[in-house]
Length: 327
Image 1 (cartoon, rainbow, N blue to C red):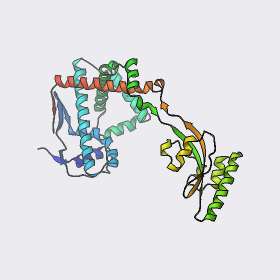
Image 2 (image 1 turned 30 degrees about the vertical axis):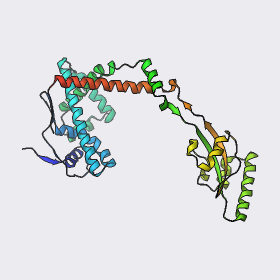
Image 3 (image 1 turned 45 degrees about the vertical axis):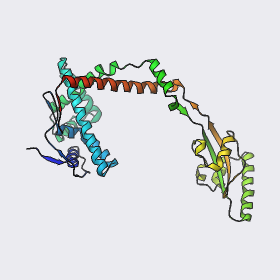
Image 4 (image 1 turned 135 degrees about the horizontal axis):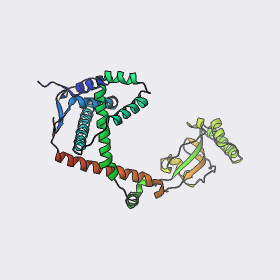
């Protein structure tokens, strides 16, 4: 008889297997045991899907909740199941070709895993296998399959993915706007509050003029800002990060547009404040050169080509093998 549990309870079981239990069940029914899929004579169980899903659960539970969590968990289940179907199809192709992975290669890979993940501690490795209810022989077959799948993907996909220099250049020209760099400015500010009465405003104006004169005479802007500025960035010497001119507050944009790098502005007056600006640096707008982005484009195109080749290959394998997906 088939047993059913809510999808979150099903995945809660996966979390328990991996030692992650900060999850709780909801009410969307799905089988917890039985077949998830079948490729020829190879059965993919829901337990296998559960095992593949386990490492993904903490992040899903951290990011999502409620109905969206249930939806994302279902998507994750389908994705894991489909990946296992692909692996099974690739293994069928490997066996059809008479492929074999010698035990020596498998044992060498297990030694590498023990050295890298367990710092060479074989006892700890065996303990983890025991906790996962796996024998060493079963783990060897898992590694053997991973190696075989990797070899087949490398042969059928990675080695066949070719991107020409012309394709890279064409992609650059066709998507040049993606490589546009807008104008940016980096500046520092000393801010004084004007006060409310005419007398206060006259005092503040005189203070601002005195400060500006000190700066023109060579006083360090950052040190002066830390000393006298009443703005929120006084502790940083009045410095702002790189900004596009359009992101600067409107009252300062005209000054920002015309102030040369290294120069001190006139006093900029708003309804409630007085500003003194120093233009630290300017970055003119323009496009990244082809040489700057060539490798990035090539990498992206190569990834696209590998995805295309793999999808086409898997589609052929599905046509040539018996595949059943169980709901």
